Image (cartoon, rainbow, N blue to C red; front, side):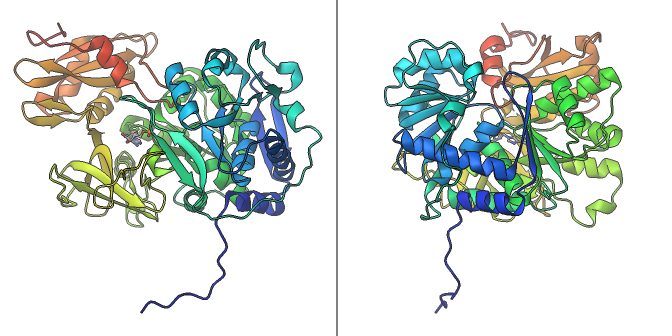
Length: 546
Ligand code: AMP
């Protein structure tokens, strides 16, 4: 019989991270850009005091344990305070993606039964539009002081954050409860049907935060200055708000300014050493740096995920800018990072180009996570780097069922991700495509990700996307959409010839369309649904969709 242990049973709670950070890293700094521009600086100890004030204020507004408080906000210090105050006091922090369609936003605010909504002034027009349709919300709190409150006629229970917390005690008796209690709620992007809620527990978040501090994950310590570009409104900003507080890293929060120039400026002026975000962010940054002939002085590591990071970009960041690019995979349903470039001791001895190619894959599982790929009958496929099937995941911070659903989301104890992947014998996983994006041509699959990565390696290409278009003979054929770099001339035949040397002949796109920009959603991913809506159709005689 298994022996029960004789160890203390102390719950893993988010308030524990806050208490640790405030006590052990009291003087460490949080730097945050206000929505109206200026930078704010406060220590972890001061932050903890303000977190306590917010917890008192929320209690004063009548929010009870188990009830949800929503945020529609940028990465800034008040959003961070909410992360800890709401979950720490036993309420549920519901982070909302402001770029959701307003109807979807109304749907999720009502579905989550949010009692209070915290929002940045940027989203005041949105709040004005949705407030009348969210009758259960008792208070709308603008993350600003009185002087920077937007005009908001007709929004009930409107408060300025700073006025609301002013005068509240800077100490809060953080309650103890089951670590499996709901802490944070985040809805999927809902490209098909209504968004679905994932309710993370305190335990899942604390465990993920511990793992994300590991040297080969984010590698956080008191010597690092981390800038999470990945939004706090989506999958917990990869748990960086928690892992920074846990490790005592300096936290730099960029507010609303996420363009290449602003990011470069804040990285330099705040001596950022580590960052994290989606590839589109790094493309913008790279373009700005290339145009200005700029270099980094302190940045040395970045974690990239959310969509595939092209090899060309990985190589450039490593070779020209001295930044170690770690490429990860995760989804709303996995709390944060599930796999990440994790080179073996032997891999580190390989030539640079080989290491960059390894980083172009989506990586190996971090401790706590297991993956496998299965065929359409659910049979496990070999880890041979070739057999591709649906990626299945399980682990200590993977969803079991969606919020308010009475049905498990699992198949034989594994979560089906909807991604198509291969796994190599050493555990290295490559995402080949989303099930809905892969191009089914003549009974074979063409990876839109591989084609995009090949296209972006062309020096005149700023960004690229590939979608499948119906074809009378082949079922589907790829259409390549290209955004040229400024002042570059690139014609259809040139890019097709370039690709012909890099991919199988039958993968070469059927046609190319040059566009000004790709539609990007709130989480920084290219919206292929939108591209399909605009450019979808049918290839008629072997070229342009008719
Ligand atoms: P979301 O839940 O909105 O964060 O989206 C999760 C999805 O993003 C995954 O299921 C993948 O399809 C995609 N994704 C995340 N990371 C990567 C990556 N590194 N490469 C390719 N696709 C990715």
